[in-house]
Image (tube, rainbow, N blue to C red):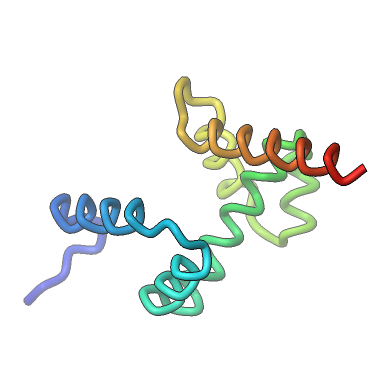
Length: 108
């Protein structure tokens, strides 16, 4: 069987999305992701998330590249995602930031 590098099995992708959305426990999600992903994939996805958080916080692309030791091309991709109208990633980051601010205010 020949694998095509950029081919995505849409039905399998939809199934994975459904499975991920059905997991409600953060602990269970962590375990699931560690079982499903290789250490390299975990590193890649967490790095991608960190760069998106930094971009959303207004950190410059050059500073992110320097701090995370990644190329500007990867950061530019993240920046394009955040600039897309209706991007889910932007909404998730904004909600997380609002929840974090609320928690900080309640802790005072």
